[in-house]
Amino acid sequence: MTERELLVIAAKAADDKRAEDIVALNMQGISLVADYFLICHGNSEKQVQAIAREMKSKADESGIDVKRLEGFDEAKWVLVDLGDVVAHIFHKDERNYYNLERLWGDAPFEDLESELTT
Image (tube, rainbow, N blue to C red; front, side, top):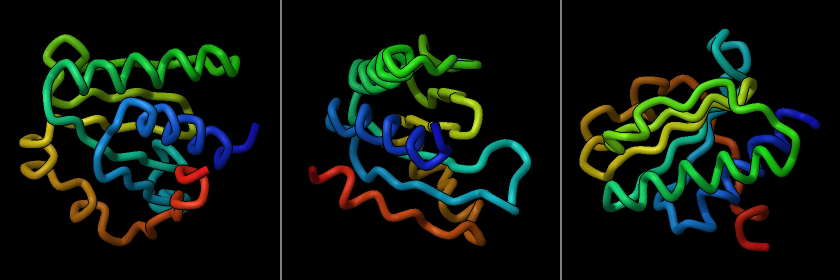
């Protein structure tokens, strides 16, 4: 499975749980942590947890090992480490505060629109 395919699985899982403003940053050559960052948010703690649960479930179904899941209980910023893809699932208020898109402003955006509309 390619890194791009893994990114699409995570993005579709987020979309299935109605995550908002799903953004993918191509971190290749920028960060040693991962090839892609997936960033999205939910409007409540329950929704943030549902998005993280769905992402883990879809990863498991695809035979992908979730390396780390952090922040689930607090549900303000949940990090799902899928290896080459790291998903950041924020509560809406926290996303505005941390603004990872600005922090990693030199990372190009990855277009997911066609995968999420099918």
